[in-house]
Length: 399
Image (cartoon, rainbow, N blue to C red; front, top):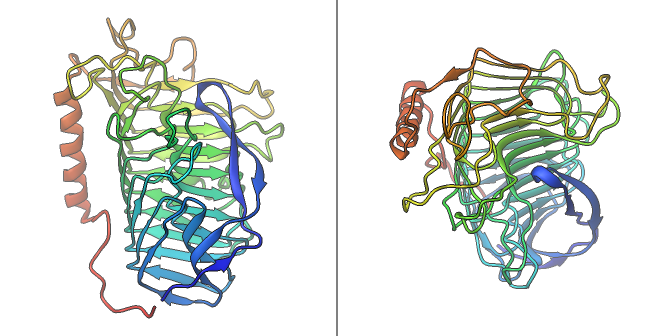
């Protein structure tokens, strides 16, 4: 079942870029269309296509609980959009981005949602989209999941414009000003970006977003491979595997109460994990491996350092404080680097004071070392009996 309905209040994100790949949401645009507009709660399944960048596949325009189950979504624009107060579950769906149909546009988001009240995104497959954006939050229930992104299989986050004259800063997941939210779980996502087939900025960006002291925003057991410039042989890049970010002026508004652990970051230009803003952030027991070599044998020249802790926004000590970065395992080739040896930069020079108990992998770090990270990821999935990507549907949802 499809329908075409004018959207009279959809909020589009525009991002103002900053150095080092840090970005902020600055304003919104109105307008746009959708192939299917959902105005009543329920479970929906089907195949939904869009032919134009300005037309979404599905728009959720109700605060009643909606489940998108087993959908196939294809288009050059946003595949799913949801507005204020949405209570949305996206499960077992397949999303395929298409090339933009206008210049100065990137492929659309798999999911673009503004001020939801509950969001679960799990067991999906998304290919050649510009990722997931959660822009602010609207209340939450006192119990149960609030924001869950897990078990998704992701290929080639792509922010490149059609005309080749620029790009949109895109991430697998951006949380923009999602503040003081308990029970946030970002886990067991498998993200692979291929060189010259993708253009991602921070694979995971936590911008002015926070959990609580009792329930930190938790990013764990994800596998992220690939953060490349375009072309991949370029020597400048500002992306990462994960970044805590944000220009907040007060501790109340800053990125905070974030825990990131047991993630694997492989072949990430610029950095694997940056801590650039906020307070009470804890990175531990992660793995960061970059060989400095592209699949064709060329040098990957866009590497800087695996781990960095730097007060990018010059926040005062009342806002930027109480960070821990410990017991991470690192082998990061950065040509011309020197720590812990030639052509290595496991820790950012002068910008990793809280980094302790780092395990430096013995050299040489090669493409074979990266391949073993993939093997260990597969082993972890088997041991924990976890499947990423869509599962077979157990029952038929109504269209």
